[in-house]
Length: 487
Ligand code: ZN
Ligand code: CU
Image 1 (cartoon, rainbow, N blue to C red):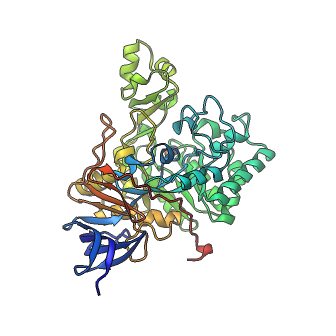
Image 2: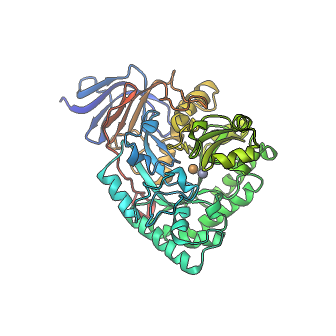
Image 3: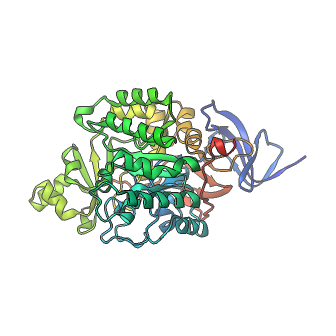
């Protein structure tokens, strides 16, 4: 009996996202689902793709993004689909586009990483934001977090103080509204100025509704440098007291004095995993990127300016060189450039490799899509893990690398029938060449589609083919499936 599929992928090397060894097979897709995997030589597809032994993997899930606005302002999501990403987790680091009943001017950093002008902060409620994403879908799926810093900005007049009982009550109400609307969790950015004054107890109180909704707590921790252990302990405590899984965002150890301490951090995480759910994500670079500041510049060996509102012509140049051209100190140059963004070289390569290699680490880009000269992680994270770190340096086999960007991530975020290739799963796939896949984005030329990606499919629709977007926008807003809600 001959079946006809909407899409038939022939002669694939199937890497199924569970970490299992690859196997040869054909994949039949009907509608938004994978319906058959096996020998389909006798079958037909309305569209047929012959991979000639190249890889078919689940579409990559970007565990850590700031794509809240990109999905609306550039719905093709080219920086993402070009590297094989089919789902993004947005709203990280305490920064979410919603809810924003009134927009502060100027937009409070780091919220300005999403939109310096503030015109995209146009959703008074989280439900209004989700309604817009559903009305005008992007090319990728998303899972959304509501940001504690956004909640503080819309609730508090003085961000230098702990929230009062009344303010906590209001923020908790906004968390509840977001979770009811479809957010999968709360993020914090306790490292950043608007949330530094928030005591642990404030975070716990604001996050209370997470347990009832089966949400997750994601955090850009208070300190990733000398006090990284204290920050990890604080994170574990929040997870225990609220009763939910925690996600440690972009795990790293910052600063010369802390070189090698990634081992200590991993050991502590591993130990605590025995008693509570803990997840970790990481990007594959020794430079970070965020708002430009003198503090962060002082602890970095090199700084590249990624954008500047008053002096946009300096984007992409080294801070050093800019200060020299201006004939002023670095600190003075930062003052003239701000508001601005920076790329900070301050991580150790062996720490980055150790964290990437750690078996429980998911891959997240932390890309900043609105920067004029963005950190290359925006376009390059996933292919760099597969190519540079996997194939060239041999940090892990391809199957393990794929697991870190698919099956593991779907499990941690509760994304049902995503992140795996099996019959019945959603047809989110990335088809690529294991021998050539790598990032083409560099610090010098950061905007470049990856090498080696053939075709990217989201919910059964092709979104990227032959090096460009197809214009198709099949993305959905995903819910979090938890054990208590049925398996
Ligand atoms: Zn962050
Ligand atoms: Cu981030």
